[in-house]
Image 1 (cartoon, protein in one colour):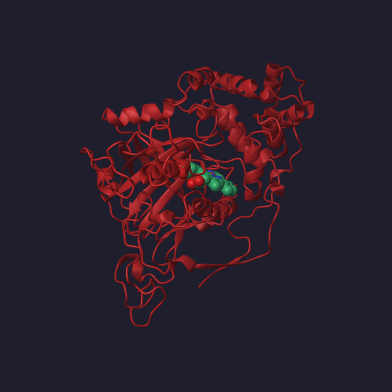
Image 2: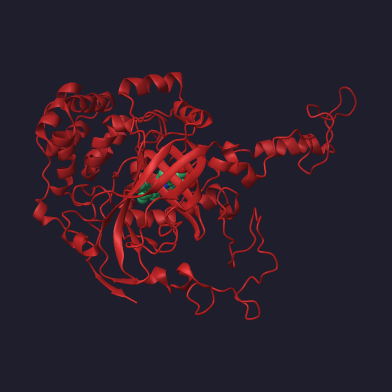
Length: 526
Ligand code: HEM
């Protein structure tokens, strides 16, 4: 089993010892002075046991605390050399080891797996050029396109500061004031908001990335990871019942599928868009609340992901896994999507808090290639980099990418590949401006994509949650957002929750949309 190799975990029987390896004859006994006397300070076993127990918990993830994970592999099944020079994606047939973690977002680590929530869909690919993390969700869009809103929005799903209760008014109050969230709300309150387990669902990069070639050309990309068995969902009633009867339903069903030799499998696809297509595209390619229509930008096969191995130890191999959108590999770069840019900072920052400064040295996070740099020491240093100088020594220098004639082949001879562009432009703040463009894709879901049964399920799913809102203003504001999607939709929800009908909010016409398109500012090659 790969994880046993990675973690050196034998299943053979072992002698009970202290943490320093000394055998202990009575694991359940504390030393005391005589029959009724106090305990002895010399009893290292007992102190060692308690002191470690006192420190067993690390902070849970501030979001995505509840989840399940497994190991497996990703295989590249196509030749993609026409759109990227990334060594993995240009090696058809190559397999790399992978670790995946799926999660709900808002609840604590003990919350039910079937909660209505987006699902996190995180994958760590162990490539020969370092770890490449796909930190995706199971929805192709997100609630925001201005990252400054993220903590506020998340707070509205956490507990009220005073009552310590979740609060429907907070949640819908935020959404009604920030209508760019409506596309995600359409998806979240469809049955996609309650997937049937962690492994029967698709994952989406959501964000636009850039895939490069050695000649400096690039395409914008969006990745889609599609469950081979389809995206299976639960009804609101089924999800609610399971939340009470088996809150661990998702963890259990994925673990059992893998143990039964039915490894969850996904087919990976990419959508691509050239920079000039991006200029012409109706929507901003950096806007995380929009999708790229498949008819215009077809799904192109990339490879497959298979999870065929359960962890031996959940805490070591899954809880300590640190996924970050900034863990990228050569020829794959982030776009200027502001939410993505913000995430590039946030994840390693929280990892240093959650796992410590040397989180990349933990076995589940350590790259399969040797790390060579000038980072040294700190708590939990496992990999010392030996006797190598801790500065750029002229006697034993570290070779680096772009140093002529130093490292050969592949990406290593591609000079400064991460700095192909310079941005010059004015600071730009109105990312949340609402225009008619924001309602087109939600309207298409409601009026074209869904059938009558799906429309009815949406109305009932919304009513079950939105019906708990007490404030008339909050209700009316959110109903005006739905009315901007479709008046009939809004009226049906109003009726279902016993609220008066309202008119649509006023959005700017589509042709007045300020587009922070890829061509805003000046891009120059260096
Ligand atoms: C987890 C921040 C948006 C997907 C997290 C964590 C933080 C965070 C701090 C906890 C990480 C950890 O403790 O290891 C943010 C911020 C966002 C944002 C600041 C926007 C400004 C998104 C978006 C997606 C996403 C748009 C998907 C497209 C995930 C996933 C996890 C996660 C999958 C769980 C990773 C795991 O299983 O360890 N996020 N997030 N997040 N986030 Fe985000």
